[in-house]
Length: 501
Image (cartoon, rainbow, N blue to C red; front, side, top):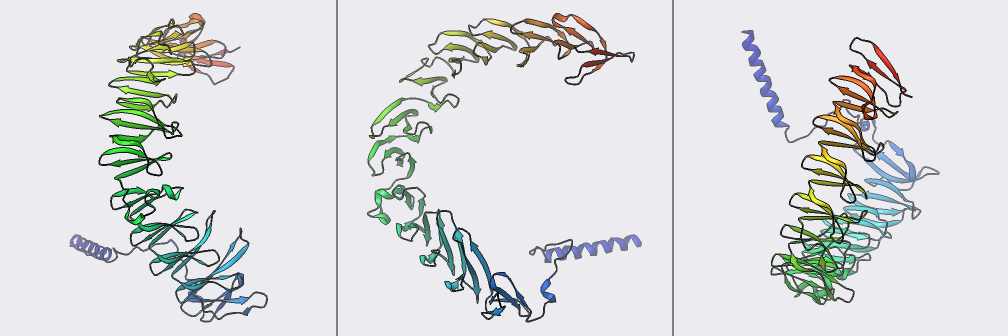
């Protein structure tokens, strides 16, 4: 029975919790560890508070009302007739003002409490922009702008106003226009879209789905005839698309490139006067000089053209062949699957299939195209991988460390490699050859040109050539960086201290 009662009570409790949760689901209640205290509950009607900047407020039993007083005598200058008053000081202008609200409307008073902006706005804010200060206003659901002196720049008649510090972009009934910082019309408010530009003449505008440039239509802006499917900026020109074809026009709508291209796009930033164009699935590169004359930098013959981000030189691709394009021709007649120029050594890595080699810039072979990887160590040494084996070649392509090692771990300060062959480690130097043959399970360098080595789970110390200094018969060692000795622990528990001279 107790069990049944317990279950019934739990079900009733859960139903109540669910009911409460459903009832409050549309309201979010903040919870605090300590509920904030309502200080107004302790106030009496008529209680007054005199604040800084000549402002006082009075509690009327339900809310505060605000007024002004003379700070030197505490004489009240006005009745507490305002909904709120705030004071703000403008450091750059070295003057202050009061933002006031009366009967639900906002206005502003000067520091001497003279009317600066009449109390008639639903919203009002003084905006301190670096280029120009202004007052944003709102009446009903319409926005406007006043000058810092309170003069109307834009009547409160717009649905939206955007200011960039120089000009006002205005919206009225879903149409956009442009005004200068004094409210003078620059572009009439009749466009569905208006893209920003430093120059009014270069501004792109749209009505419906058609675009134009304001300088092309300024005589009949709201019923323009010069219209296109898309327009993009390109230096001092415009890339224009109409009926699937691209052309290039200048600021006066003069045709620089005819509407005969399937593709057109501004090229890399360094080549500001160059434009990538395409026809019949091939691309080329054109350059326009200061006299608007068109020059062919790369003919329309390639599948792709781009800038090598390491050298800032032009690369082209045709099928699976890649080459540099230089002096009106490909550097290696598109003979390779990839090419990479190294300016610091004035050499070019080339790839055929999945193998790499190295050439001079004139095409003379240096390293045969036989390696999986080639890494430049310095102008005279190259780390190469052939299949799974690693080695070092010189600047003439001759082996200075045989390409026979499974792993390479280069230590620039020591100028040698830890090498691994058939699971065993050794040390090889470019200048000294084999320092330690690869016959150790593990190893570590010591500061006096000796080496800790491991064989069959036992440690010892050897010198160059593998000469034994401490027999390889210790199960563990302790060595701290720059310490003057190594501690080696024997399996029988004894410890040997080996000094490092």
